[in-house]
Image (cartoon, rainbow, N blue to C red; front, side):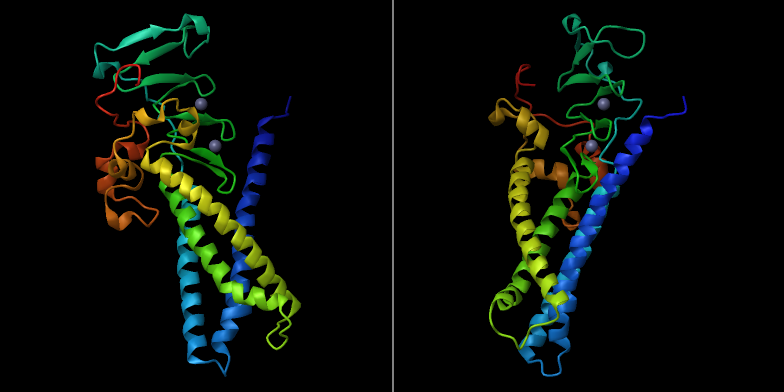
Length: 312
Ligand SMILES: [Zn+2]
Ligand SMILES: [Zn+2]
């Protein structure tokens, strides 16, 4: 049969890409409302006061600077592989000769190769699992994403807005995208507020064309809604980063106070953002950080040294 079921998955990916267009459309409406419909004309008006010029210039410059950072972070999340399991990766028994191998015959799950028994390797710092779908051992904190159809290193969640999984390699970029989205949408909301109020008032002298008024109205409502929802999301992720856990782990955790990867706020933060301060606000990592911080690669994670075997 010539019919290939995987064509359907390709179709889904194209539908997913529509979200990129939705994001760009929201950016377009906001740009039109702020720069073209309100602050641009205010800046260029012959009778503009000094105050109007300063405010317009500040809004327009800040808007463009935040927009640049927002789009840089956004496309970094969209285009960066969140982290896939290296084909050659296996639980390294050599690191700990005393590590035991426990056959889990009761599960009856077949595994790769010609062995029909599932094994869980109990290493000092992790219990390694196996993904039957990918036919690969899972490093610690790795999860299988059913949308992407593969295992993702330190998977946080699959995000429809970025048409990608958020995992070890792009989590920082995702957080920065949230930060810049919050700042940009707050700026647009505050900048459009006076125009939005004027929209409902009876003052007719400053009213523009119906198209401009519609853009200001839609831009204000959309940006206010995004600012509020992104703020909630940002607060949630700040607490996850501070405690060194992913969204998936936060749902799975049974004893949050004894989380094995929680090494203190500073070290937890560095495992996502790196240690170099000059790189904290941009979607890039310093080479030195990539060398010194194995957690940034998404395979090895340091654990608390004083935990019992059960807590690990
Ligand atoms: Zn998998
Ligand atoms: Zn995914």
